[in-house]
Length: 73
Image 1 (cartoon, one colour):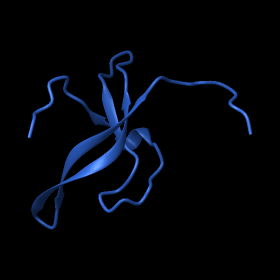
Image 2: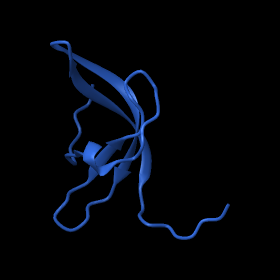
Image 3: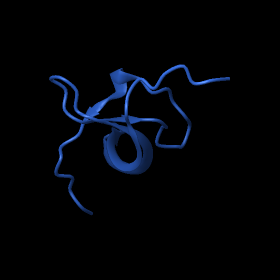
């Protein structure tokens, strides 16, 4: 196996994501890729696992626009 090319810079982060499940607002620490701002898109967070820990593919359809001023808990 070999690396052919690095396509984009990203940072792996653990983000506290909120989601509506069954009418309840829940949050969970989630492994995510933090993508830098490109063209008209701002910084984006792409979840890499489900709230119960199962891995998912890095897909831009799952991207969440990230505000530069995160709220603290």
